[in-house]
Image (cartoon, rainbow, N blue to C red):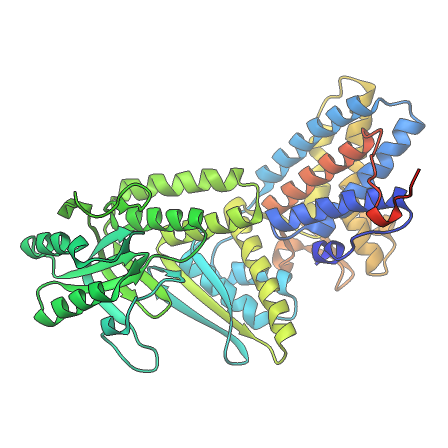
Length: 487
C-alpha cells in the first residue's frame, strides 16, 4: 500500500524537496494508522490542493491564511455531503463484494470476511493469525478470550490430550492481579464459597505458588469447591488493567488490584463474577455468557467507542477495537498461510487492513467508489456561498481536487482523463468509471464502493496537510552529526 511504500523512504535529495516528501510521508502514515486505507487517494487530493493553492497565492494574489480558512469551510460541506450520500453495508454478499475490492485476487478470503462480519458484526472481535495449513481457514469461538493467559498448572486440566483444556460451566470468577503465595490468602475465600454454594471457581492471579496450587488441587480432589487458577493476561500494565476491567464488566464482580489490595481480606460472595462457561488452555483464557449487568455493559461499550474516536496512537486504537470486540460477545479467528513466510506476513497485513476498512464501512456506510462520490460532492461546494474572493478561490481549489482521484485512475488505466471526467459528470447519479472495462457503470452493481469514513479522513488529512504547507514560511533543518564542521 502507498503508506508502507512511503514509510520505507527516509530521505531524498536535495534537502528542499525532502521537506515536502517528509510532509506527505507523514500524512500517508497518518491515514494508514487511523483508517488503514485510502492513503493513495489522500496523496492525490493533497497534491492537487497544494498545486492549485500555490498558483492562486503566487499569481492570484490570495492570502494564504484566508485561503486555508476557506479550504476548511469547504471541507466540512463536502464531508457532510458524503455522509448524506452514505448507504449501509450489511449482509454477507454485500460485505464480501466490498472485501473483494480490497483484496483483489484473494476471492476466497473476501468471501470468508463477508461471512465473518455478517456473523460477529462491525464491532465483533476478528483475529488474523498465521495458519498451519496452506490457504484460508476460519474458526468461531462462543464469547471471547484473552491471550497470554491460561491455566497456571497442568494439574487443573480436565480434558487432557493434544490440546489440553479446562472448561467450567456455571463458573464463578475471582478477578485479580495479585500474587498469591500463601494458602492462608485463599482459605477464607474458599470457605465463603463453600458456605455460599459456589461449586466451580476460576481464580485470576498474577502468580500462584506451588503451595497454593497444592491446596487447590487437594480441594479439587475433595470435591468441595472445584477450582481453576488462571494467569492474569500478561500484557502491558495499562492493557492488563483494561483486560481485568473488561472481564469484570462482562462477568460482573469486583477487581482486586494489587495496587490497592494486599489480599482478599474483605472478600464477599458479591465480589465474584459469573459466567455460563469459562475455559482455559496453556495460553488462553475465555468466557462465554458473562452475567454482568447489561446496562453496565452498554455503558462500557459506549465509553470505549468514545475513547476510540479520540484515540491518537495505533496501539491505543488497536487495543480499544479489541476491547469493543470482546464486549460484542463473539470472536472469529481467520488463519492465512502461503508457501513462503514473507508472503504469509504480507497476506496477514493485507487482511488486517481489510478488516479495519470493513469495520469503518459497516459503521459509517459506503458510497460509489472510483472517485464517483467525490465528483457528486462537488454539489456541496456549488451550493456554498462565498463571502470573499479568498473563499471563492478555496472552493474552486477543492472542486478541482475532488476530480483528481478519477483523473489519476483514468490516466493510470491509459484513458484520457478529461474525456473520462466529462463522461462521468454527465452520467446518472451513482454511476462512475470502471477502469477494468473502460466504461461508465452503476458503481453499486459493479461492486466499486468506498468507505465514507475513509474518504472523509482522506479529505481531512489532505486539506490539513496542504493548508499547513501553504501557510508555512520557514523550515528549520538540523544537520546530521557527521555533516557538522568546526568553525
